[in-house]
Image 1 (tube, rainbow, N blue to C red):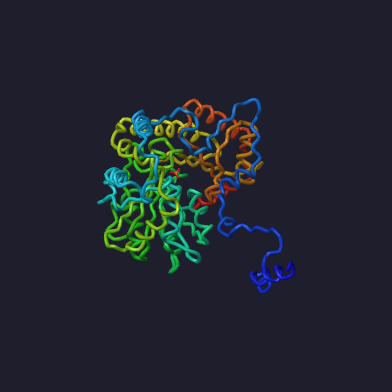
Image 2: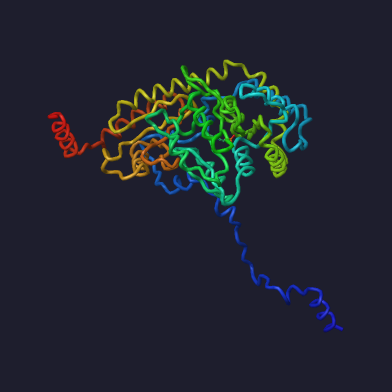
Amino acid sequence: MKDLEVLTAKQLKPSRLYKSVRTHWTVAVSDFARLTHNPIRAIVEGLKIVPNPDKQLIALSIGDPTTFGNLKPAPEIVDAIRKVIEDGCSNGYGPSTGFPEARQAVADYVSHQGEVTANDVILCSGCSCALDLCLSVLAGPGQNILIPKPGFSIYRTLAEGFGIECRYYDLIPENDWEVDLLQLESLIDANTAALILTNPSNPCGSVFSKNHLEAILEIAERYFLPIIADEIYEHFVFPGREFHSVSSLSKKVPVLSCGGLTKRFLVPGWRMGWIIIHDREDIFRNVRKGLANLSARILGANTLVQAALPDVLKNTPPAFYEDLVSTLYRHAEMAYKAIKHIRGLRPVMPGGAMYMMIGIDIECFPEFETDLEFVQALVAQQSVFCLPGQCFEYPNYVRIVLTVPEEMIIEACKRLDEFCEKHYKRDDAIIEEQNGLLGGMNRF
Ligand SMILES: *Cc1c(COP(=O)(O)O)cnc(C)c1O
């Protein structure tokens, strides 16, 4: 009787007899997870960051405007979310692309981008999630995307997991970080799925002019290339500059514009972002459906924030935005003026956003071979931490954030000055050589 039972069990599980199956526990990680990584984390974790114990650390590295408590969301936003929580009517699931009222509120808020209806809006869990959906709807393994260099690292993090190749187009610091258009064009081939534009830029703080955006659009139109516009810093522009969303200038090129509450409303942790679909010629018909499909993977954005959105976007007073931008502008000017005079450093004055890039004449600091070594020594001696340019694929630069309190910027600039004075060495041989060359040229 017992033998018969064993036989039956075997007959019921032929897989064990005919197929090769696992014989012990080995759980592999997917290629998707293995290929996904954040270069900033990898670089920063590899650094030796040991501050000078006699000096308080000043972190100019963190792209979160709420870190130091000097910048706070408007009371109107806080009231809006409080009301929603107390009402208790927004605790359930919403539609995966967002509540119609919230999508309509965003459509009204972004009306400067072009004609937008609630149907053109997809709410996401932060702008990063918006970028994730845009990339995954437009590109797949074997395809490539064009991303700015220097550029925000999340594009690479998102693309590489999917097996999408990143091709970097150059931004030129001497030209206010405009795109090297010829080099951009040289990267495009039949497998290029999209062009990513970050305007205003993290890490450069640059703002593209209308003419420049039109020149970029001309290339996108010629090569039938859709644009993913990361416009999370829209309206963050300093006096004398104007923000143009690329979609407002496009005649034909379809654009997915990504934005959100994160930076302008000073609530990164609320995770509210959006995609605006700009498509005059119905080129994105399938992409639109694809985005709706993809949004089902997360079952929609946070419903409390969605329910508060109409009030947040309508009630935040213009003075709140204006104060934020003028604070950032003041900080930018202060840092620029102080750093401009430091030997061996070349700050690039930003036109917007909340960052400044500073070039390092690394050959004038013979003790350091790379921006990484420069940054490590700066932390060890002066307790000032800036992100090395390598985090943005851009060596021999550092990025500082302008959201830290004024007195910290002043103190950090003083310490930077002291540090550079101590380590700056100009090779006299190089100077003599240059003089000799000049003398030679003067004879003609
Ligand atoms: C901060 C930032 C984001 C991410 O925003 P979240 O809403 O926090 O996901 C996207 N793009 C750029 C350029 C950023 O600086």
